Image (cartoon, rainbow, N blue to C red; front, side):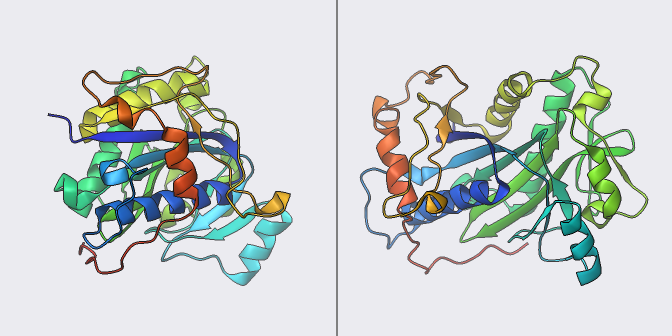
Length: 298
């Protein structure tokens, strides 16, 4: 039996910081809907779970709770034209850039009765299933400290997550198409000395396009997390209410697989599909959690 609907927000290529901003709004919506003391919000579906998909529009190095680059290295990375971002997730420094699929699931682990280690394992399983579905049977997931998706001796999918009040953020970075792997030569990716990185395009002769990877990725995500994925037509980018100038806008997510396609699972209440744009605009207002929820331990 499906564990409920998960909305797919396909942002397309955009700056890494903007994808993080949309993700944080999703986290706020999920916390507001899961908290017992939260004010009811009719525009939010039950659990308000989502998965934010994007491709970084430019090069950026990001790190989590550990592994911040030293000042000298940070200066060199900036000189090469890369952005730097400290984010709230586990893991060391890694690179994000064009040709990567970033998947940020915003899920309620308490409702799914899933521990954090099990959740990380499920993310790796999504990546492994995707690789195998694309004809790469050697793909495998490795345990800590090698957490991720591997093809041979190269990591093709990096995993770094955060979980607060049972709501997840960040997730999986999959190098799928012509990612410039030279950017990884300037760091120790994920803090793993002597380990390499690779991409799907380096291992899969047909050069994968975004759509070739996105649809099977979502199929694998749906299988592993036992959920119904909800799509709608893709609204154009909108400014968040009260955002002000052009630089202050938050892009409203593009929805679906392109071309206005919908995939509505049989039996899903139509109310969850109608009015998704209103739900998104409410999400961009930034609903807050009541703050009274415990955080699960590792």
